Image (cartoon, rainbow, N blue to C red; front, side):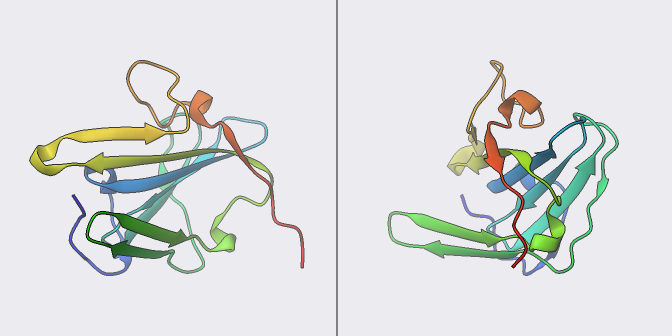
Length: 136
């Protein structure tokens, strides 16, 4: 199911329906950030001091771009997060999504699930690397 178009803007609890998420943890320490990007064009960004602790809104110089393109049998979701919203250094990354089907059935997708139950905030799920951009 694709959430209805809501227009740009921050919104909490986007993960309760189809939503794409990016978790970034800079090298060293437990702190990390989370970006939630919805096909509705709503978005959220949070900082955490450790897994699921110390949550606060993360600032962004402008809103992420979220675009949903639906075909007859597929959908493509494009998202662009402003570079100024990303951590400055190299990061471990968790790329995840929640997909809701008709009838409220949800599946939880990630590069890795470290436990039987999905927990996107578990640092063991941050298996990709995002290298800091180099100055132009």
